[in-house]
Image (cartoon, rainbow, N blue to C red):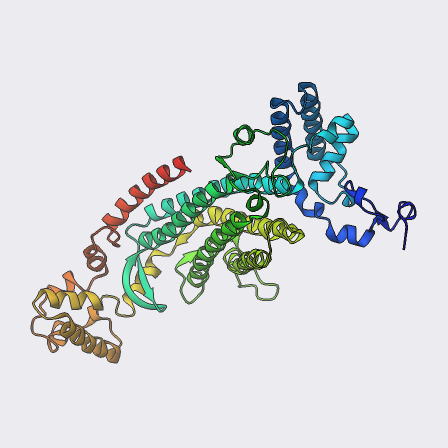
Length: 477
């Protein structure tokens, strides 16, 4: 067995700042394997902000002097400047972002730097840093989400009268307006906004002061620290506070739903830009070509976003699996919480940014959409409704229209292309007004003139309400 003195000279071994308990240094591979500084350095700002607030609180309660507090604040500020200038050396032997910053602080200001950790543990420190970081990232994602929502509304406003086929089972169902379809996307994203804002409330609770698991013997003022850091509340139980990662799981669940929505939108865009649909054009800057087929214009952004949804689903499952077997309180397992969280954050934000740029730039092929709506007997339900208004029971009307559709299929004609005599063989209640009242695309969409309907007037009103809803949603967020 290697002794402590021997291992200190062993280039394959390292000793941490916590090494007083150990008789030999950590193996170099183990040190690298267990270190997290490679990825947790990304919340250095939150670590420094949290440390400044902690030091300020310790000075307020008399654990630190004002001079010591000022030295700590100045030292941490200088370290942040050094990190942002790219001249800070991150050391794996110091394990994580916390110990790297604290070690450098001690190098700069001496023993006072060692006093910073009074009354706290890395357990509550990292839990605080993650919450601060995630809170900032949620706010940034909400900004991009709002930009995408406004882009959708702008495109919808230009297309309140643009008629396209609505689908069920990917089969032509009824005519809708393109603006109405876009508003369905908008509603998905509104729910995503609400979920993120609600998640943020549970993120914004401060675990600092819980120390390792049981609290601290020092006369700390947690409410004051929470006020300094902008937390809405402090955690009520120290055991739960240091081991809870529900907030990260909840965010990843919200992120997975966002990606599911973007994936559904992507699937439609991929179909719509195909030669078989030609409903919309995506600007060239969001597409790529083929290395062998010169005619190709591939919708790479939607395809990539559709694919990236899978990794965010995986990030959610990683966190759920990570937490499911852990006893209270903190365990080293929780080091694995960061990469799935970071990946979900980065992927969602990047995907939303791509869509926020792309969606307002879409160019609908209005005539092709209209021609597609004329195929597939999209006004069949309108003909049934027409007969009901003439006094026929709906089920009977349904059967009558079904026979008319069968004739249309046999003659390769839409219902509007059948003659009045052909239609009247199925019901003598059908008169010439059927072509104006039921069998035109405009009549079909205009007839659905109620809140939530596809009528152009309703779409225009819905867009106005949507802007009002967004203003209220983001003002409260």
